[in-house]
Length: 282
Image 1 (cartoon, rainbow, N blue to C red):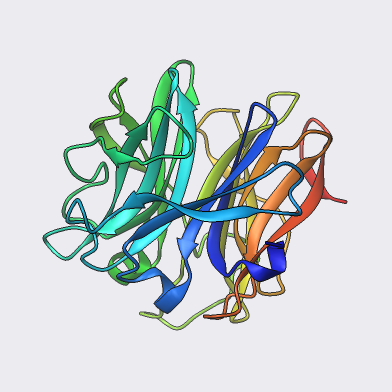
Image 2: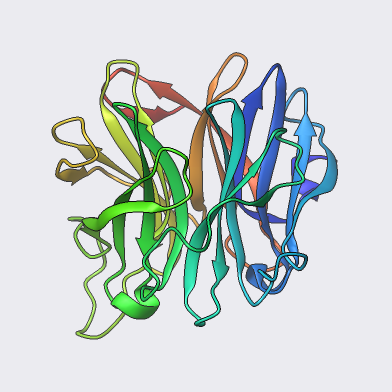
């Protein structure tokens, strides 16, 4: 399959032992009641094999509503998937799953959501700083109105959160954000942490700018997850987003889905340049 033939949202690519593994949200009905997740594999990012189911959410009682934004990270010799599901209480949360292979099948690892039970949360991503694992996630605009991006420390086995979540910023905080009437919603989507070759800590994230999906970027002022994040000019403003950065065999790439319209979403790849301080599209 070619990239243009894969209808998917929220793509995430893992490069391991010379092979690319791509995960994402099954795009039907914006990822609701889709029954789980698939993995696609490729040697060159052009031709893909699959899809092969790598998690059956129905089997584990997690197909209540959303099956969103799976990410797979290698951590301590195993592969951990972080994905968002609707909990028994009707609120969304991010869970951890585990497998010995990036191909799956993954099985639930955390006892429940790693995000606060009483919050509406999505799009959790793993980030490790000084040996401490963190979950960076969105506190949904559906509950918070002004969507937030937060982080919470995780236990070393990634089975539960440790401590209280901390807000990093809100969707309305960027200098370029649309100005809205009181009570109108501001969206946060898809955080992903990236440290440059010179040690600068960046966050990729998405929102809507003039009603179009956008790929945004922010930088930690002190190089730590606990620092204040300064918003940089958006990277993409023409209806593409929920991106992540990965090192391909030869190039550093940003992958994201576009357009943000049900039935038309496809994964896209754009080369980026790490100048040590910032990322620039090539």
